[in-house]
Image 1 (cartoon, rainbow, N blue to C red):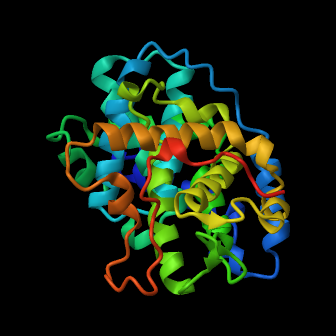
Image 2 (tube, helix red, strand yellow):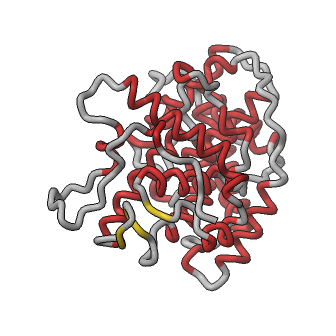
Length: 318
């Protein structure tokens, strides 16, 4: 009988082998094949299973997702790892009835599998390190069995396009020299891109952590394809930063989405932002926190909207 340690190493090697056979070139959006790879990811996302929201433990999702994201951030794991982990968690839970005491094991197993598939080898957390987050509640054998159950459930097909993957591509075209801010040419493109990056990150985080207190179920964005959520993030960012046109033709051509198709998703994002702004107990608004550049020179800084999000127009330039 092989030891548990040997089984764990063998499973990790198998996941890495699967990753290498299916992985796409790092920073693919900077290569000459960006359009072809984007089309491949768009086709791949159409194969995603339908999310039925039928897990008996669905009410634990918000806690588990918050906990998972917190672990990822403390360990400096990439945003695609976060999103793939949550995808695995959502669809595994949606098809299994999991005992409450096993929910954290499932969540950590999803994180391990996602990290082994998406992260640099040097940053992949050790099982023992993750087990410390639950006071060593589980043993190595349970982790190995959990990882194996996950990869077998997904048929070892772990190259799953998430919203994070599409945002990595679209955000390179989020702001350009032909854009206008508040009716004037952009004063400083680098600063505009910094502001846009903050907003993109904010909406990307929002897309996986929708709080029920804002009158939306916390899996709201699973009703939309990941590429549509990513495109809506770019459009919402441009609207909040008063960049016009809000959805120019080149972004429509890049993403394959029209303004009409994106409008429902964008509206949810902006209303969630408005709700968080309204519910914030801090004096500084969410909008100012995520959008203001570090420099205070008003002559060339891109400013965020000083008005309520609800007053932003949902009309797009066609």
